[in-house]
Image (tube, rainbow, N blue to C red; front, side, top):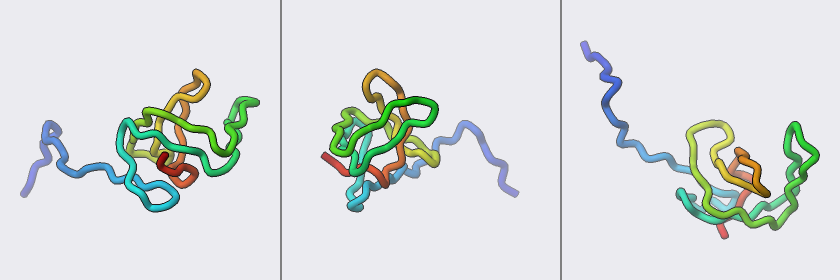
Length: 82
């Protein structure tokens, strides 16, 4: 019987790819490929907007970033590597 140890660190690396199947990494710059409406705000992120210094997370919206001073979570399918 195996007992799971919560202190064990997973060696699995998070793999996130953009719309063209390029591998994304923390700190990369990306460009939006379509206009995106921000939920709960009147803000619309325009196609071609460059986003710098992304952070990859393990969730449905797998890219955390800051755009125009707001922290946002985006799906990598709407991004291409800059």
